[in-house]
Image 1: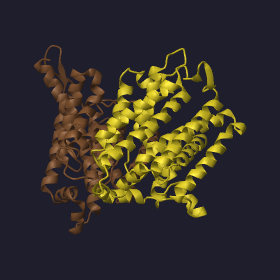
Image 2: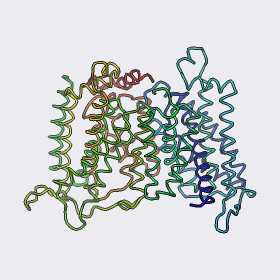
Image 3: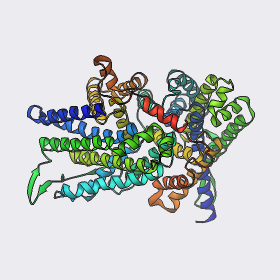
Length: 290
Length: 336
């Protein structure tokens, strides 16, 4: 493999990892703060992509689709927390698994009635169309570069909020030790709702930004959900930094697995997970048992 | 353990009654009955680790499907393979997969365990869906059903609905007997003890990891047994058999039937599949929505499953633990 091809694959891996991070960071925080395992997280990724397709087709603008899709996801997340998720606090994992599985069935049906079951594509914004010519035969789409940059900015924003704001401090403390934060008299009601809604909005955002790269199709959430779980298991539950490491590890493994061992590409990610589990059963940055 | 003895008697009576069904029911109901029995067997297998072991596994569909795929791959196209060697092979494949996945997954606890089993299960799903080992996402036909014959003499004709139904019933009855004995044995008691309070079980010297791994392997093998016969029934295997949606569906059946008993999941499977048929007939366009809503309501309102409804109407039947309690206890033990 020459250097240019390697560079292109590396960029692909990083871009994939960054998108995964957006989905997985929401998942890991929702578990860390709310103590809820949400199998329907992938469904929101899928719904985000479909909403983007619908808004882009209706308005002709990718930007409206981006902002509108995230806003809708945030509001839906707030409502979901209020109506369903709230009832799961303190329930056992089994109830959470079943309830979020039921939500997947319901959300799939909602998607079917709102958007149908067709496969769609979304056009990237005009000035991000086209590609950069690298060599005579190789070129790299501008939009993929923009996705890299955009996801990186969002990731930095997540870290900045967690690091420097009061709500970020509560979230970090809660992920570390939920009971202790409650004992200190900090109310989780509002924080929980925002964390859940932001998690959903991030999943939808990831679905929206990848819509122009991949296609929009009904089963897209399932694959993403499983990979996000792998990311969370790799990084350690509740750890956003762990999710970043896990997401990049999965992105690299998947992309280079496809290049070097095409026959085993579908299992390479899980083999890496198996190895990490042998080494650190609670994830790379995980400290506690949950 | 009086409850469990009563459960065994009740199960025996039910199986005898079910064995008489071919005298009265038309072939369609026998086929549906066999489907319920086999999916119910998978749910009973899952319940050994979920209800008795307190371990929420989301990869049992993989063991179920793997046995089916094993049969499909070894079946010759134009002649029937003997059940006497394909069945042990298929169940063995599921047991080995369960042993390997269990050995890794059981290093983790609680929610990690759920995620890790889900991921390994999907690994097997993608292995069959994305590669052309066995037809990829289109699935794979078993052109000729295996035969149950000795020395050229057919013992039971699996092509006939009655023959297949009775074979499935006998298989499920034997598996039920095995599970009833297993859960009452010292091994089963130790498994339940590790569920009730892991730290105490460990302090008493129980090899908790090995006990759980053994239970997980037996459970995976029994799920494979169900999957083997299910693929014989339909003459077809598809990656969806291994997918996690099926794992979650049999988990719903387990909860619907109540976690505390061996045979509850069979009742849960009958209730779930029956409801699915009714909803598909009544609401052809919205049945998935209705089913999702029913699951939602059961989880929110009926943590003890249909048994809780029966209890409310008739007073408590056989039950060893109050509904919903075992998992809460397990969570307390692992510090979540």
